[in-house]
Length: 486
Ligand SMILES: *Cc1c(COP(=O)(O)O)cnc(C)c1O
Image (cartoon, rainbow, N blue to C red; front, side, top):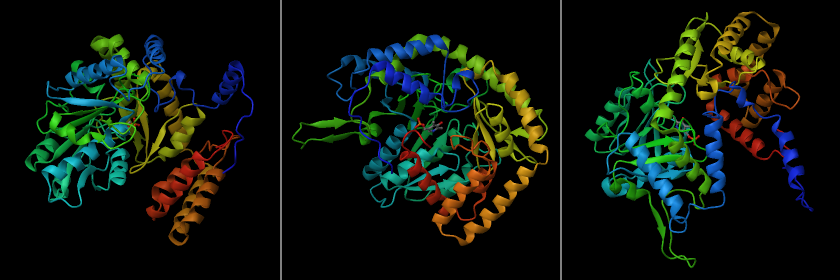
């Protein structure tokens, strides 16, 4: 790792800000509505509200609920309003967390601790995860020593209830369903999964991280959305991210439980510390007051009417995009996503090539695997972009269909990589992966503009164990980059 010298002298505020603005120029420009992940935006006025609220509570700390009763009230009301939105009654309790991942970590930890009381025979707790469930569940299983049992999804890309049923063992403590799943935007059969959990007297978590602040409003607009929340018997907890379709500032999510008895297993207290009795409900110690305050403020600002109004425009855009994509030769939307997330796949085109072509046209779309697809999270930032998007997508698909020397190069790299990973140790594969990303055309700052070959390779490696190490190598590289150099 290269050493960054610790600054000896302080710098002025304008100097620092100017420097940061310069660095920022290389970042994704999401304001144009051409980025389909990572950023959620509800318009300039709403953005101003969360900025102001965040700044007002910029210094306050949510760690100690008695020190800042204002923050405590915001959090209690955010939990209460969200419980009401998600079909909860007065029994429902919950906490704000830093994001979907922390909410999911909490639900898995809670299940493990709950099982110690309610399933004392379980030595090696297992959670059943449909393949499409978010990696945060695998992360939680990894962190907390729980076994993640992955089950296939059906042809419709939703959790396969038969497969989940067969995966249940005497050690199973939790069943997970998504509303909707991130990769394909489809809603799992929550009622069946929850009934299964009830039948086996285990817990059932609904991951509504991305849908929690969208599906209820989409339902109110009259779109056909089956119940997915606390109205469904057997659902014991729900995660919902305020910093996605809740349009709150980042660092705001919720973990909700059907009742206090279940949530009890989440709580932590250390009574023996010389620093005093220390207790905390979630992973975090210090919690940014701004994120809590901004979440409360945006809910007050938009209200149900505001959220419904935004959801209407987002859904009109999503429906238009679905219809438009279906009309482009070679492209299709995978499954039947009822909300505003979708994946674009193809039976005869290399969608990674289509993604590269879209990248050259300024659109940022995430690449997915099994099957190869491009991901869209449609939100308010995109409502004026649908025609431009569809036009460029049609052109990108046509370009991907044309034969090109580069594609031959891609398939050669792919073939070489497939052979190599059968015989080479992980370190070599790592270098090869780096090579491949370089070969397919690195732009000036080292980020590959064309990634089709790399993604094609990653998705089809015969030895996924090596890939795991390759990816960890990349994580190290990204976290050790100095001077903003990737
Ligand atoms: C975003 C998301 C998560 C994880 O949330 P983070 O805020 O990124 O930690 C989990 N599940 C689903 C379905 C999501 O969309």
